[in-house]
Length: 121
Image (cartoon, rainbow, N blue to C red):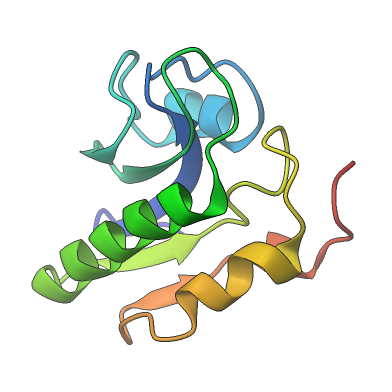
């Protein structure tokens, strides 16, 4: 990711407290905005996996946010989105629970290399 049209997609909480993991990386390196918990911000896009109280969202709720992201990506085909394994770190889900949500993602979306890492705790 080097172009200004490359967008780093990360898991977030609805409070927009980007204090750890990919969210902190997005804050420090990709223009994520504190207290914005969803959507495009700088050269990043956050998909909520936790609520305003930093409690993990149910998979059905995450799926809704993923669908909103995919629609956004379809409408912005001039951008390339690099999707990290959202929900697979601090939110505690396994990749096999999250990855199918992206099966029909638009062609301007790519999985980040971190999807190939072992599941985190």
